[in-house]
Image 1: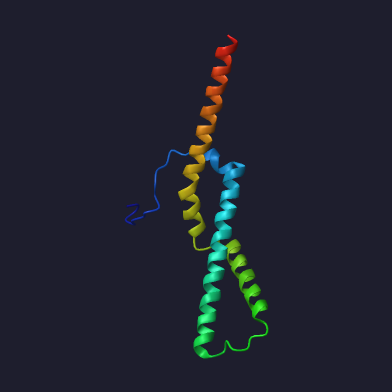
Image 2: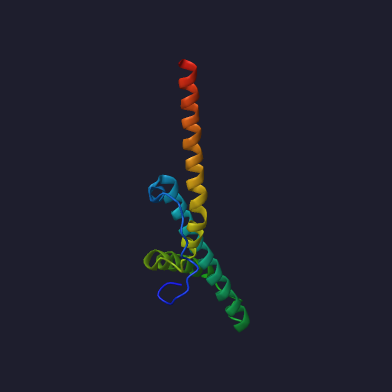
Length: 122
């Protein structure tokens, strides 16, 4: 509980803050944001289609592709300008630990290889 407010997002991690600046972390962030944008776009399209089917207005829509494209563009803009609903951040937070662990494992392998190489030459 923080200032009387319960939050399940407050989690202490041992992840090096520098990991967030790596190329892989930036790609992960972009992928998570794109996923959220696609998810919201699909959700809104399906809701619109359901509403039109209920009202009977879905029979003849010559500009359906244009409507869908404009909805996707609006969704992308909304996600970019407001940061979205935060789903991308939850996805990113859940996956960045794996990225950090993979980086640490790679560094450990490289250190072991270097140590083994030095032992052979000594």
